Image (tube, rainbow, N blue to C red; front, top):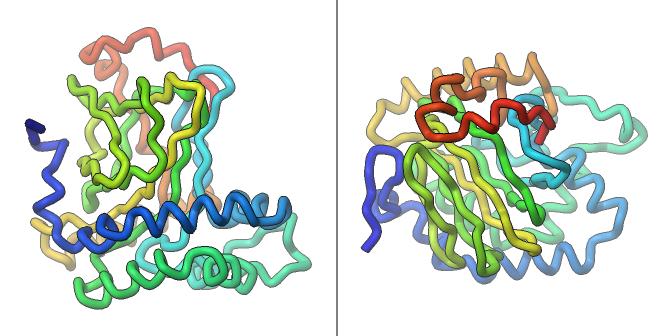
Length: 264
């Protein structure tokens, strides 16, 4: 029986996630269809433009993390790019927001529909939605995601057998296909993929429901403003406050990670 605590939360507390979980196979099918049919240039565009870039969180070795998504801070990716006037020099001859909208509409209609319906009926509670893929051998350095206004859900889409896990504080948690893992990811954590296969989840960030909405909106606005100033290609997801304290590495038996310095 799964034991929950202050940082590993029971998904049943968040019924607005049910529609995503009920349709996890359709969402996975859209992701696999995208990978099988997208052109090389479209795939590159998705990761260049629709994926948050991080400069803070580090890994061991050369294995990486890949991500791209459809919703950031409650806005469709194309509207987010327009609103924040994010410029992509490598695509200056393209209408970037329109291209992002076309890719989203062509490959992810079901996912987009579920997000829109969920937010319509739940006061825009879902803030970020993106696919996150761990490449084989990935080992991420202990860090925090400084988001005191949000929890993070991971919906398992493609989870091969083996040691693919999230270490958070003293716990080691495993993803399962078709199930949500919900974390308060402001606690120190470090995921890994010690298999020879890719692992993909749908990352779903949502407002903490036990805090006043005005409070969490204000925190989000301030954090996103700072993060976009640091790095507009973070899409407001990552920032300089994501580093764990040195004492955290010692507390959780991970002092060997202090030497890791490769960006994720």
